[in-house]
Length: 425
Image (cartoon, rainbow, N blue to C red; front, side, top):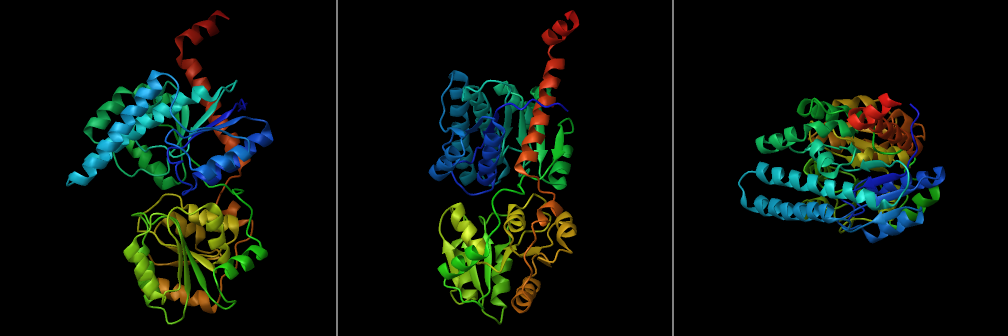
């Protein structure tokens, strides 16, 4: 496909924190745009974390971090904020979680529509490649209908389904589904989306980038271990990322309590459950190093550098992409991972830098940690990113550009004015 390499516009609803993997991806993609001579704009109408803004500016990206534009953009944003507050209030008062989730899904859709309208304020010439990096798993057509913008949506998970009211709204906007291309990082997420939205065009492609950042060096490891007060024969385990409901930190705490050999646990992420953190500290006799709040990337990198292995423990059936597994492959960090997902297990089961343990089985994780202490895992080679199928920033940008070109052709053929002009020519 002869794609038109236009300016890149990245929309990120969660840009107020450097947590998650949007930040590393946005930085690397903006840098790739600069290499290719393409303009890049980041739209974060809810504000952007200051260090993220500074880092994006350093690689030549423009940041739109507040609402502006015309009355449509402002009205959509105001409505999204009102519904967002209603969702949070309903979540505190309602006995069931589905109602607040439905209100929240509509609020996110309106916020996306406002941000898509803000793409017109990027002042770039040429055809834009517009991508919502952390898109909602619902109301895909409505976001396009309200904004009038064809766009690409990266859907990382589908946390809730549309109830009757949202399905009715979605059907009213179903004609705009042709103006959307959805990309999800795993086959499990694609299957879920295909079941819920059979008319939606969905592709599968990892979101994590193979060249998101440089591999850790031996010098970084030595410095990081010294910073954390680790001795050469100490075993350090990394727990990175917020403790969300799909994580199984309770099993990690229970496993650590079963160990007969000392370890140190390095924690970086937000949110963290204070009670579970106390359990972790008790299990390892206080040898926990934790940074409260959202951790800047330099600190996360330092945690990975100091660790002998990272632990990824998830609940059974979680099939969304693990940015932490990608981190380990990119940076060169051994991994202890639960067998929560058959696809992940098949992909990682025979790798020399990975040790699997049975999901929700503290004894099995304790055995894996003991094995690590006695027989340390090798570090992943640079080729492991290819084994995981992680694309480079250049390949991802080219893929999105192809999708944007396909969207443009679809819109052209669906436009009767364009069709008449084509026939007249």
